[in-house]
Structures are given as structure tokens and as C-alpha cells.
Image 1 (spheres, rainbow, N blue to C red):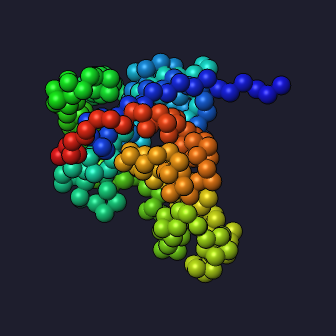
Image 2: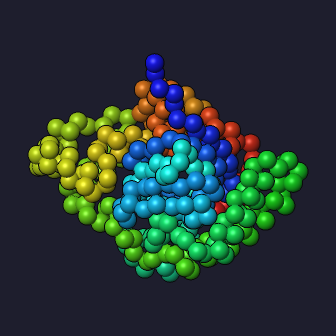
Image 3: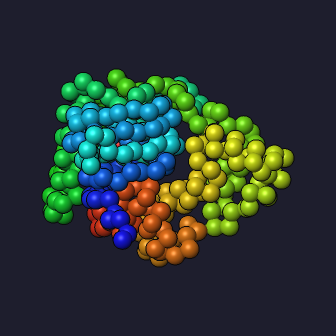
Length: 294
């Protein structure tokens, strides 16, 4: 008999801005190693979770805040129970960088959230809770109320980010994968990013860099936390997320981003983000969005 799939429920909701979205997840799923192109700030509402990341293995418990940096490879599984429930807000780098000002421009490696788990910061926890509530309200508010609700959302976003940046951010990212990448490995990453539809083979990549295939595979995985093919699939998923956000059909997004078909995109998308492309399309369609808050 085939084992039952882990219980997993996820709600994704948009925001008044293209570069901000949220999720509400209750899951017993064990997430494999993956990364996001955005910053993440979340609140663990119930249960506990153990995660491995570029900043070491950490445990988080109900009431703790959790963070991720762009490109930071991490995983996650329940701790001490069958499942856990958490809420997240995700911010595209330009959103947080614009609010950080000089802090974001002080280092060529960008801005970093310093700790994967934040404890005992009641003010930030309360601010994030309010932001998540207001974003959820915006996502379900009648269109007639949309002109009022974004103001409340923006106030909550600015307040949350000010607390986060003032207390838990660094000018230089600690343990950034790219910081350990050689020129040859960065060349491979850039080549893969430029050839989503027809990526080169490992043999071709090795010949391009002058490295042996095993040497290249090992160095790439050490630098970016994933082997080249897994990194490529997640890059495709990020591109598909942006294509759907900008109005592409699911079939077109799958074809444009190099997936074999729509079901292939759905599997990779759900594995990386926790929600399906259809849920993302529904959450982000039909409402006008404002420029990114500065």
C-alpha cells in the first residue's frame, strides 16, 4: 500500500504591491533543500520546526520568528510533533533594500537578515502579526474598499520592516553562498540562468570552465547549496512565478520557463513555494497594484 501523502494546507495571498506576498501554511511535509529569490519573515504559530540553512541547523518553536535571505538554501521538518503551522511575508529584494537605504548599499554582497530564528522580540512579532492580518484582509476585501485597505497595509509593512532592519539586519550577508564561488562556478551559474529553455550539459559546462565534471559538480554544490540541475529547476520556478504574476497563462508560463508541461511546473512550483501555480494565479489576479513602497 502506498503511504499517505503528508498533510499540507497552504493559503497564498497577494498584496497591494507586486513585490510582496504572504502565505499561511499548516503542514507535516518535510521540505527538501531549496531557496527563494526573496527575503522571508515569518511567525511560527503552532508546533515546532527544525531547519538546516547556510547559517547552521536551527530549531524554532511556537511564538518564534523565522527568516530567510535571497538565495539561502534551507530545508524544514516538524520537530516534536506531526506538523506545524506558520505564516510568512515575502519581500522582493528591491522592496527591503529601498527601505534599508545606506545599510543595503554598504556592501556589494547586499543586505542580510542576521539570524534564521528570532526570539523574544515582542514588538516585531506583534507588527508582523498585524501586517499578515491586513494583507489577508486586503486579499479578500471588496474592490470598493481597496483604496482604503492599501494604506493600512503600507503602514504595517513600513513598521514591520523598520523593526526588522533596525534590530536584525547586517550590511554584509554572513555565509552567503556566492561569496565562496570561484569565477568558474559563477560563470556556470550565469550560463544556466541565461539558458533556461535549453541548458548545456555538464560536459559542456566543464569544458567551458576547464574543470573536470566531478570537480565542477562539487564546487557548484558547495557554493550554491544545490547541484546545477536542481538549481536550474528552482530558477525556472522563480521565473514562472513572475510570469504568472504578470498575467501569463499557466500553460504559457510552463512553456516559456522550460518545463516539460504544466503538470511538471506544478510539481516543482509546489515543492519550492508550498503552493501551486493555480493558487498563486488566483491570489495575485484581478487587483491593481501600486509601485513598490520606498
